[in-house]
Figure 1 (tube, rainbow, N blue to C red):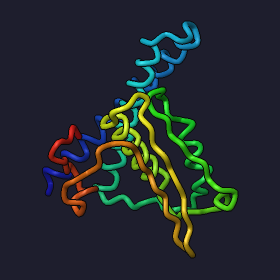
Figure 2 (cartoon, rainbow, N blue to C red; figure 1 turned 180 degrees about the vertical axis):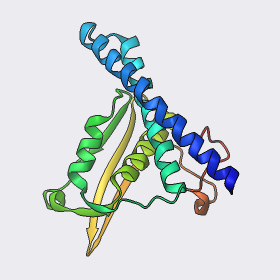
Figure 3 (cartoon, helix red, strand yellow; figure 1 turned 90 degrees about the vertical axis):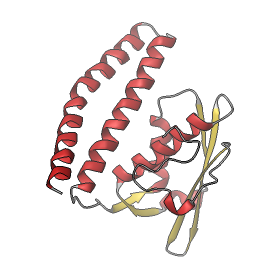
Length: 179
């Protein structure tokens, strides 16, 4: 246990140290993008930097939760959150459809915004990784039934055929998974 805690502390510390240079790289890439608009290499640099930043955030959040940190549950206006998430995707390779009904505008979910970010980024990354079309396509839909809100994410991938009870387990990999 002591060794595991030390490893978690080391991982959290090193991951935290990566944030500053990654932010600097992203800012420099954005400046390049402003100087040379439409450059494919600069676009790829921004996408890769965004993926690295997301991975660092996921690792820090995992270290926090595994270290006994509590979830930061709060009411989240899900429609506004999902629209912001879609707007912040830094890729041209994913068409993410989201068309909430007017009645959905006031929906609140009790959630940890950091966890939502990790979950939806993972879904988007998996869609990109396992899609057979370019651009990859996914759709987010909402549904409310009484006090419950259902958020569905569907893409055109081949789906998952393994043990659904293991989904969400740390370090679980499907039979044909890359991650």
